[in-house]
Length: 85
Image (spheres, rainbow, N blue to C red):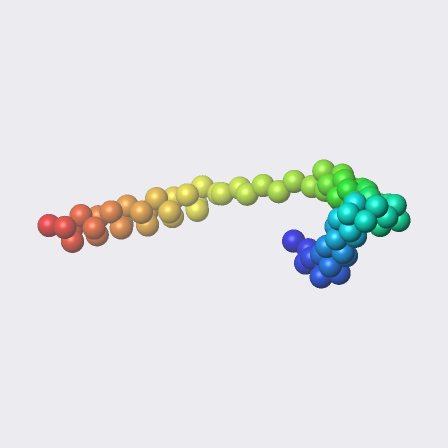
């Protein structure tokens, strides 16, 4: 996982605030700034997802690990059964 940049969150909040202020005041420049920032974020998001499209991870558990878990579970069940007597 990558760490999120504090500037990205700050600039996104400022762009959203600028968009709200632009709509409230009728300023085309503020609305344009907010729209441009939204497009930039959307394109960056889509580009990052496209680059990660071929990345896949899989967890494979070997038979020795499964046998060890089964033995440990069986041991615990026997211990609980003997403690309950």
